[in-house]
Length: 133
Image (cartoon, rainbow, N blue to C red; front, top):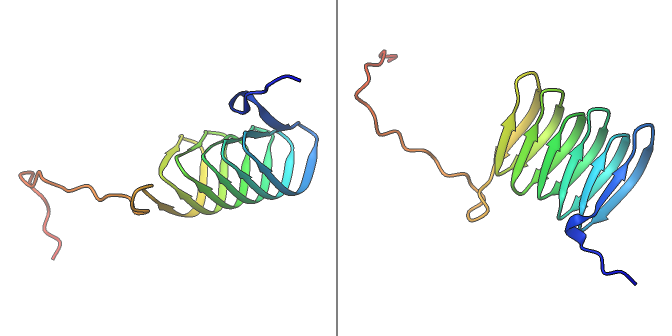
C-alpha cells in the first residue's frame, strides 16, 4: 500500500457538479462546481471562477475567485481575486482584495496570539492637518 502525503492531496468538486452536506478533511479543497453546507479543513480552500459555496468554511487559508456566501473563518490569509465575490461574515488574520472583487461582508481580523489584530501607532504628527473640531 502506498504512503500518501496529505499535504500534496487535494479534494475537488468539478465544474457542473454539486454537493450538499458537511465536508471535513485534513487536506486542501477546491470547488469549481456548487457546494452548500459546511467545510472544515486544516488545508487551503480554493473557490474557482465557476465555483459557488453557500455555507460555513473553517480553514487555514482561502483563495476566492468565484462566489461565496455565508460565514468563513480563515486562520491565516484570505485572498479575494478580481472575479471573486464574498457576502456574509468573515474572520481572518490577513486579507487581500484585488481590484474588481466584491466584498460585502462583516469582517474582523484576528491575530493568532491574542485573537485581536495589533493597532498601528501613528508617530509622524509633523504633517499639517486640517482641524475638524
